[in-house]
Amino acid sequence: MSTEDRRKREREAREALFIERAHERIREDGLLGLQMSKLAADCEYATGTLYQHFASREDLLAAVAARTTRERAARFRAIPALDLGTRSRMLAIVLTDIDFAAHNPDYYRLTQYLVTEVVWANVSAPRRAALLEAGQPISEAVHAVVAEARKQGDLPPACEISEEEMGLGPWALNVGMQSLANAQGLLDAYDIHRPYDHLIRHFHALMTGWRWEPRLDPDEPSVVRAETERVRAVLREAGIGDAAADREESAAG
Amino acid sequence: MSTEDRRKREREAREALFIERAHERIREDGLLGLQMSKLAADCEYATGTLYQHFASREDLLAAVAARTTRERAARFRAIPALDLGTRSRMLAIVLTDIDFAAHNPDYYRLTQYLVTEVVWANVSAPRRAALLEAGQPISEAVHAVVAEARKQGDLPPACEISEEEMGLGPWALNVGMQSLANAQGLLDAYDIHRPYDHLIRHFHALMTGWRWEPRLDPDEPSVVRAETERVRAVLREAGIGDAAADREESAAG
DNA sequence: CCGATTTTTGAACCCGATTCATATTTCGGC
DNA sequence: GCCGAAATATGAATCGGGTTCAAAAATCGG
Image (cartoon, rainbow over the protein chains, first blue to last red):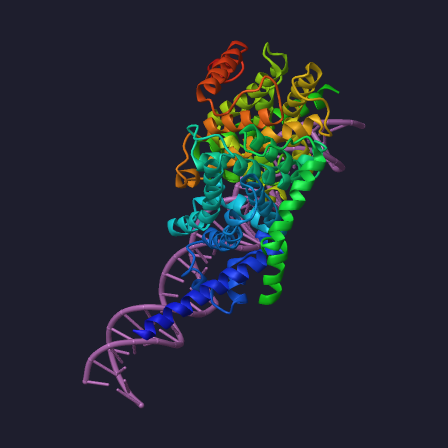
C-alpha cells in the first residue's frame, strides 16, 4: 500500500522537523528556551501533535541528543582505518571528541542533563535505546583500535581486560574533563586553565601507564604538542573534524 | 546585643533544619520528591519562610549539596598525614571518594544535576561560592600529596605542571567514571561491570604513566587488589571511610 | 502599653507541560 | 462522487508546583 508508505514518510519528516527546530531553539536560547507549545507553533502544528511524536519534553530532548549523537558517532567510523600507529589513532578518537564538544557546547550540556536520573526517568524506553544505539559506532571504533593494538603488539597481550574495559579509561577521562570544564567557575576556582590541553597530557599518561607503544611522556610539552598537531593534520586530511563539519554545514545551509 | 545573637542563632538553626529535612526527602523520594511547600509544612513553617533562606528551589539544592560536600571533604583532611607512600596516599584519596559515592548515591546525582547550566543558573552567587569552598579541603589534600611526592622524588621534578593540574587527571577520571556508572543502563549496554574496579586500574595506569613511584602495573589484578586492600586497611585504622561514617551515624541516631 | 518596624504566613498568582473533548481529515465501500 | 467509520489534528482547559506579596502576627524601642 503506497498510501501507507507516504504517510509514514510524512510522519518521519514531521518528526525530523520537530527535532531540527528543537535543536535550533536549544542552540539559540538554551535548554530553558525550549517550550513545547512555542516549538509546535514554530513548526505550524498544534501542541497536541507534538505529543504524538514525543511522550514528554524529556523524550524530545532525548531525540535531539540521539540525532546529534549519530552525527558525532559518524566522525569516528573512519578513524580505525587511518594511516597512523594504533596509539595515535586512539589519540585521534580523543581529539575528535574534543573538537566535537568544542563546536557543539550545547550538545554536551544536553547529554549531561539527560542522564540525570530526574530527566532520564521521563524518557521513553525506545528513545533511551535509540540514544544508546546512536553511540555504538564510537564504541566499535575504540574496540577496533584496541584490538589491532593488541594484534600488532603495541599493547601487552590480553591481561584480563576486554577492549571495552580498556577504552573505558580514556572515555571516563574525557567525560570527566568535559564535566569539570563545563561546570561554570569550577576550574577557575582552582586556577586551572585550558582543560583540554591537560586532558591530552593525562591521556598520554594513561596510555603510557598501560604500556601502549610507542610510549610518549606526558611531561614533555613540545613532544605532546607535535604529536597532537601531527594527528590533527591527518584528521583534517581525512575530512574528519572541524573542517569537514563546517563544509557540510555550508553545503546544507 | 544578645537578642540579636539569639536571633541569628535561631535563624541558622532553622536553615539547618530546612537543609537536613530537604536532604532526607531527597534520600527517600529522590529529587522529584522534594517540593517546596511540602518541605515547609514538614518543618512547620510557611512556604514564604523557606524563601527567606533560599532564593529558589535550586538554591536550596545547592545548600544541601554544600552541606554534604563539607562532610565529604572532611574525610580527606587526614589523608596527607597517613603512614603510606605518596602514591598510596593518592590511591587513598580515590578510594575514599569511591566509598563516599557508594554510600551516598543521591549526593552524586545531586551535584551532577546542580552543575547543569539550567540549574546552576538559578543558584545564588553566595551559595555557588559556598559550594565551591566546601570542596576546598579536597583540593588541598591532593595538593599536599602531590607536593610531597615531588619533594621526596616519587614524582619527576616540576615539569610545567602544577600540583592542581596533576590532580586534575585522577579527578576527571573519578568524575567521569561516576558519571558513566550512574547513567542508567549505559555501561550494561557495553557489557562493562564493576566500574570502580576499572577506575582503580586506570588510576594506576595514569599514575604509572606520570612515573609516580613506586610504579605498579595496572594489568596485574592481584597486585592491584592487594594494594587496594592494604590502603583500605590503613583508612579503616585511621577512622576514615565507611566504618567511621557508620559509627557517626549510629551515634547521631 | 503604643505605634513603628520586622518577620511570618499561606492563599493567590503564574507559567508551562500535558491532556482530551471536539473538529477535521482520510479512507474503504457503494 | 458520496457516506459513515476510523484515524488524526487541534488548542483551550487542566493541572501541578514554584514563587510572590498583601495582610496578619510578632518584636521592638520608647
